[in-house]
Length: 116
Image (cartoon, rainbow, N blue to C red; front, side, top):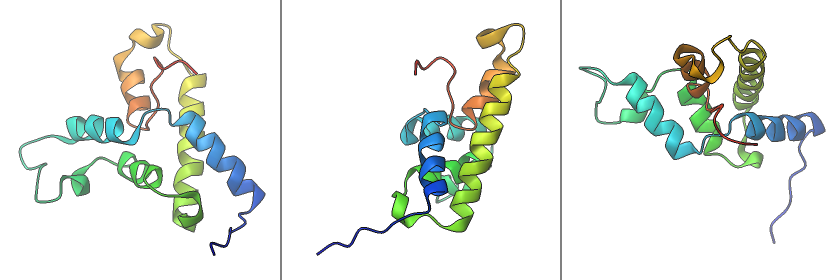
């Protein structure tokens, strides 16, 4: 019999917020980060180790089940939500056409072109 673990209600809300803000599927985020982190020595035996931060940490959380979260994962989720919300609130005049701004959000797993 599987026992259901109860999580702190704050973590439950954070989990929902994280998955609402990080709107890029994990494999798409991985591909984006590999592109961003590519370079002469970027691809060793385990390319995931060379992914840029904090995207690598966000990707690791996306691959987990809610019941498997660590305190570090919770910090990553909280930081990602705060950073994404801060960046989206500071939308530049050029909006979605501002590649630097959009790429900063994509590095965090948020694509402004995805409809909610």
